[in-house]
Structure formats: C-alpha cells, structure tokens
Length: 180
Image 1 (cartoon, rainbow, N blue to C red):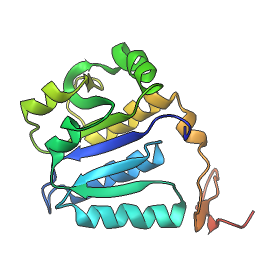
Image 2: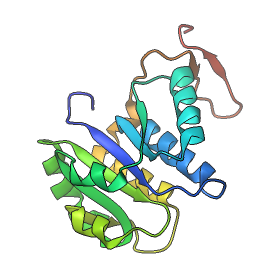
Image 3: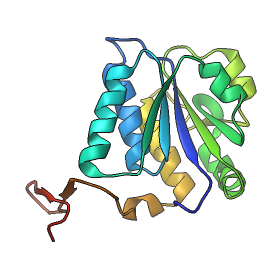
C-alpha cells in the first residue's frame, strides 16, 4: 500500500462536544484501514491528539493535521475526490473505477459530519453510498477503504510501534513491539 499514491481522509465538519468520539473514530479508522493521513477541522484538536497518541503507541506511518479551509482542501486537491454519502452511487458499482484512478493519482476521501454543502457534492469526482441507508460515517469509511484496498490493509505491517496486539481467540494481550 505504501508504493501507491496517497490516500487522505478529510473529516468535513465537527461539532465539539457532539462529534468528538465520531471524529476521533474517523481518524482511527482511516489509520487502521490503510489511509496515509487524516485532515480534521481546526476545532477537532482533541481528536487529533488522540489519533496521534494511538499512532505513537501502535505504529504508523500515519499523519494527522488540522485545517480551517475544508473547502480549500477539496478544491486544491491534486488527485481525485471521493465523497462518502448515503445519496451517492453504490460503492459496488464504482469501486473498480476508483481503484483504477487511485493506481495513478492520490485520492481524497471526504467523510461528512454535519450537513454537507452542495459544493462538496459538486467538487467530488464520485459521490459514493455504502448501502444508501442512514448509518455511521465510520462504518461507511471502513467499508470503502476495505473495498479500495481489496483487503490488503488487513495484513499491514506497522512501523515504529511501542506496542503490538497479539491476536488471540479469547483474552487480550498487548506486548512491547520488539517482543516476539
């Protein structure tokens, strides 16, 4: 995945207090499922800190940044833009085209929070729906990234991790990353 063009996730909108966990989970999901970075609204500093902390403890590379120019990120993106929305084309109908485009150029995945203005729909190369039903934007992002990477993200090796989770049928085991 690291020899492919960049995949960045833009969290469009954040209501402090109401969206804190959801915005954090957008960042964590982007990291865990293969994106290279997440761009958060400038009022989501707490979410940024949490995602950076997890990246430090469980590995990267993964970048987190804040911006006050959400529309500018979309407008100035040098690559293709996917907007995840329940009103979009079915993911299963457009995933091959998106994968093909991503083989050649960077991809920005826009994940809405509050009501997304029509300008975002117009600025996207694809408006993509996962089920075309109301559900969590985190679930939509997870399904989309898994489809984009064909499941390769599930075997990713993490660099510079302090800790490593040991897969187990039952129980929880976290060990220092350098321990076998």
